[in-house]
Image (cartoon, rainbow, N blue to C red; front, side, top):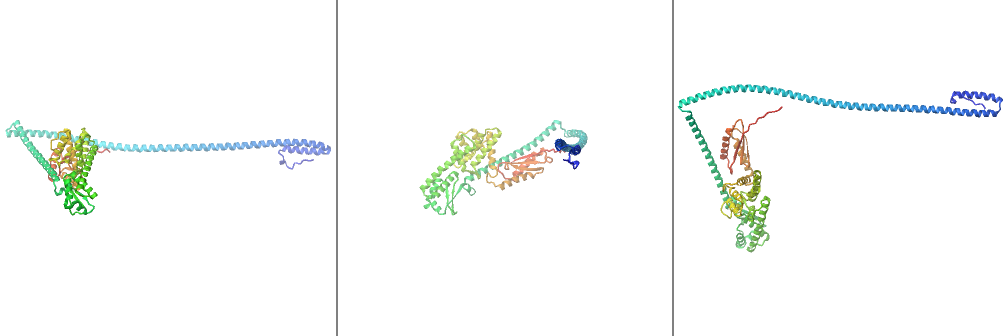
Length: 547
């Protein structure tokens, strides 16, 4: 059998091809001489050799391929690692460059800000230096001017002293008077001028006292008018009661007027039944009795059974009910003001003040307000706050009894407080709050002030808001009408006017005269209760600007 090799590329290597060719030639030669068995043995040996050679060749080639593949893969991996490292290095370099640029930019901005600040400071320093230079020049010029003026004034003073000395010598010569005699004449003239000023001041004080007495008289007259049944006081002494119908008027009057007579006898209050539709009026000067009559009449109208026996029963029930209201009001007032230890009789009189008015102002509310005002002022002055509140609460206690006892309410209240064992400070303050006695303690002065504040505040009494505002405006206008007055303010409910003057037109010496002139003008132009304090203020302002 002959093995053919068709091409050199069919075997793995050229030596194998050469061996195959040699074997073929050898087989051909042997085939002619040897037997087939020997050829087969040789062929098997040759085949084993060829298989071994081919396997070795294939393994070697496979090893080479694997080595080449591993080398290629190692190169690729090395290239990939190198590229990744390059990219990472470039990214890190880029981030470092960005951070460096950012930091550099921030540093540049800070440097620019510093440069701007330094520039501003330099400009400011330059302006200040210029200003200081100008001020130094101004000061130098001023000093030179002052020096010149001082020298000039010194010369003038010497010249003036010389002239005065010459004039005095001439006067002494002409008058033939000595220095002592001339001094006596001058003192006498000054004494005459001061005497004239004192006389004017005394006359002014007398006129003020007369005006105060006149106002006091008017207050007494007003109190008397309030107690009398005159027309303009009718709203203070009457109470109106609504009726469900006009037929109720006949039942209230009763047969031949017996019901109305029984009611008036039981209450001591007049009942007015006129043509006014749907209402009747109860009238009386005693506010407590009038309130009792009003309550009793309302109960009778609600009950509908109106006859003398029922009237007496209802009136007695209304009296007890009103006594309870008075007692409760007095107790609540004492607790509210925090005044302990008030006697029961005085608590009852305090409750009665709930139904008492003075110039349209509720007396109980006024007393509570005065108590709080006194407590505040006493606290500021370091006095006994409870004692001050006690005096303020009790200062008008006499008004609850002034329809029953003769005399002014200050005297009545002081006597009542003295009988109940109140302290001398309380009795004197009650008596002195309307100048019925001289104040002996600071509490007596405080109650006068607190009473005036409570009575004079806007809305406390019957003075309307428009009238109050007009009076304050008129007070300010009078003060502003004087020359040199910059502005004026009416304060403390019109009891004081603050006048601010122009310092370049009004001197300290002229302030007293200006205050007297304004006060005189107010006395002539305005009508007011009490007195008005005129305070003139003058100030000197020095303004300098820092740039």
